[in-house]
Image 1 (cartoon, rainbow, N blue to C red):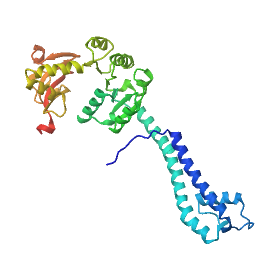
Image 2: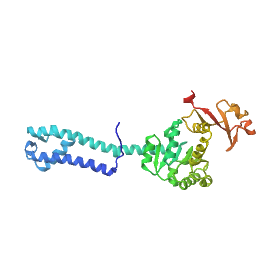
Image 3: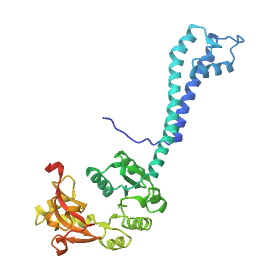
Length: 334
């Protein structure tokens, strides 16, 4: 295992360094050929000029030569065999590598990304790859979400690269701008997770997203209780306050450690049980919530309204209902 670090050199600087090495090697060959020009023979006029040296060097460094100028002395032949030939291979590698890295690869990558961007649909957009955003993505991946269906937007290049290493689709940009969200086709997305790091930025992203996608489920991270109402007014469908949730767990752990552990168990994919949401099955219509066989039903979502398992309306499931249930984690119980 070796350490890795992203290069700090710009594309122009990388090209400049490669060209500098290339010209330095060719300059070395020209110098030696000029000094040892007595060991060369020009089959056309018998005279080896400086122009002939440049011509012979360029031909020798890129091809095997045409035979009009040839080395005749032992020293010139050994120099061409032991120095020029390896340099020729190195020059070809530099030219081919540069063409692939900065031209072919970039064109191919840009074409693939444009094609992918045009076909984005039912994807999950995550704006902000900070602590909360990165943990949300890791949890999604642990739950079996295809990383190719997760689009991460962040203004920080290092955060974008980290998300890209997980296999996610990434975009370097500002999520508060219409153009950024339109570029990732927010109108065709399945969900939006906003974790911008600041409540005011999170609310602005939510406002921007809501006017572009009126029916999109939007989950936001809000760190101050006073900002929860503005976030909901901005169009957030789910508001997560990590500070309040952490306080709830801490307070509960002071009296009932089992309750706190169970809540953490439900929240994580690594727990023995987890919360799951699904549409009601056709054979479940008309039956009470407590009679489902797939898990322990705790809530019904009917037209966006939550119905608890203890309420009278939970006595008969209806078509179009969504069931929230507690189910065992397959990897633990299976």
